[in-house]
Length: 295
Image 1: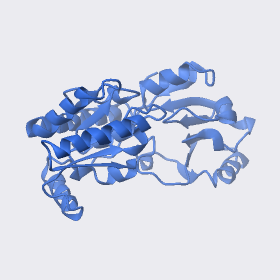
Image 2 (image 1 turned 180 degrees about the vertical axis):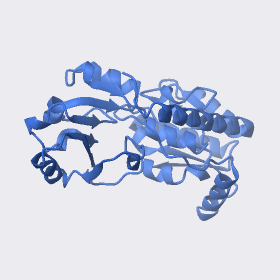
Image 3 (image 1 turned 30 degrees about the horizontal axis):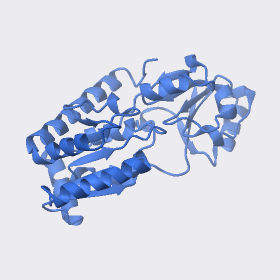
């Protein structure tokens, strides 16, 4: 069986599924070159399995020869699956939340949808010597020394959540935590700065799964502050790997939880180490099962 992986033209370190493709005998191409590559395989009468990563609304292949030989990998509800949905044997998703969401709409057959949890690459975490060195260097580079840095993922926040979160963080900074540094950043930037921060804030927008990123933060030993919506609860275990905040109770509850987090260094360390432990357990379980998620 020839495996052909089609990745988006734009590179993304948080691409789902983030497992090492080099461990499998296959070829990798981009959306732009997909038609030519598929045509080559079909001309050679290869027993082809096509793995399409990302939004299938640009799926350019309508050949019936591919029916039952297409696997889609989605981290959000597709806008226009079209031909890809009809040809797909499996639709892989990174969370139970998205699996159940897709099963409720009349796009894919429920039997097509399978859970395939992401597997980020291992990395030094902030509580070990190599991670501590990375953290120190990054904080010096960003001029964060002496600051408690919380970065929020811009794509994860609704406009109302953004407004309320800014107001709360400003209130905390002007009050008991003048050392607090808070900023809204694109997910890619937060990913690059993970070792140097105290926590990641993940909002309640539900049009995308953030499971791949949540695991990246846990791998780095970074605690998670997350609004209880979408797929957050699947990895953010309240009081264990992070703190879950109510989507409705955005006033005193958010202030109380974030204040507790900033004030208690032992809590931050415990949350970070617990997240790292769960990441390691997940990684060993994933490898043992060769990444075959349940349905």
